[in-house]
Length: 124
View 1: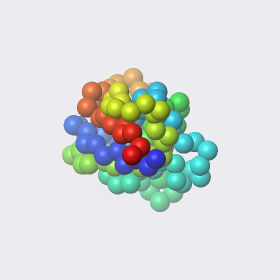
View 2 (view 1 turned 90 degrees about the vertical axis):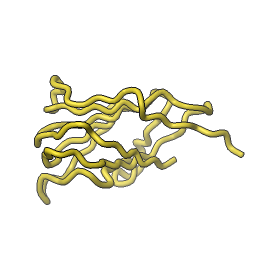
View 3 (view 1 turned 90 degrees about the horizontal axis):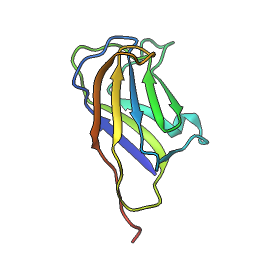
């Protein structure tokens, strides 16, 4: 299943910051597909330069977005994710969205761990 997760951070981020998207354990993000098509930033973040594009990495069920230009005023960010749906229907636990000042993730800037749900419907 293909998902477009769109969100708006509350605060600006400096160059060198990272954003993490932690998906519920019941989701399986596709990692065996062509890397260009399993997850990517659709819009809202800019490459640092042509030779230094926005990066995404997957560890377990957490996607980390890095290597983007800093911004003082947040704008909507949209990410494409290809994942296998949970086996059960209904509302999932939330996707946890966080941003940090550096890759070390020691200083939290934004956090939303309660509002980003997915509802899985039964097949007709």
